[in-house]
Length: 322
Image (cartoon, rainbow, N blue to C red):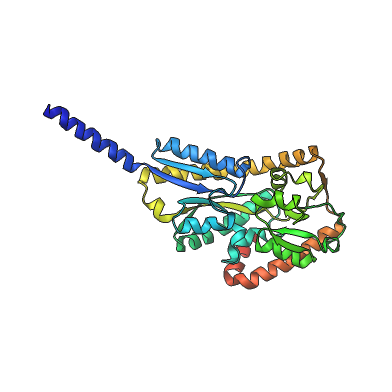
């Protein structure tokens, strides 16, 4: 009897220890469940669950269902969410280097975007570390182009467009070309187009397909202006509370997700443009004058950005261009 009792107590202690050892994390994300970034997050969460034997369970909350896009960083920083996915350029006003990959034509290819990321990573690690967070991984969006029903021969043709802005950089582009910037996050974009709040914007083929932009806008100018990155950030205290084995599993799953995500971005870019065409979207090669004008916008914005970013920004651009 005593032996049975002792075994029962031991089993109970083991079970409660197991329950205590299990961690449940929330991962807010701003994009639809069908978006390649979100699909990658779900795969990442599954990998973590499997690698840790269920000790760390991560629930992905897509489409800004837990927090709106601009709120996610603060939620992770404050510990309301242990992990989250943010669009780095959204936070340029807080620290200019968050917006380095939103400067038009600084890095306008996947190779360029990866090189910029490698130059940016140590600085991001340092900044997020100071804020009580860590960067787990980052994945680039496909190259950005211009959605509009207007025929664009030059930047002058963009004057007066009701232009969706989702970051300081996209708002500044509007100002420089004479368009009217309207702040609209990804989750509200379809409605904003349907109600005429916006009639143009700059984004990837992926966003255009996700939001069914082809129902409202019939042209996409393939300017390949920049490749902004989504970053998955982790609350440092939440990470430190994990045991070493779980930490290692999380880091490995993050590294795998980064590699998988960049490959998925390139694949999605090709597939999205095909899907847009199939739904009646014209994929237009930008005329020479439009290209020249947009390059000038990029040069202006790089100069403005360097003025704000100071020596740290110059260090990043030098490292990228080396």
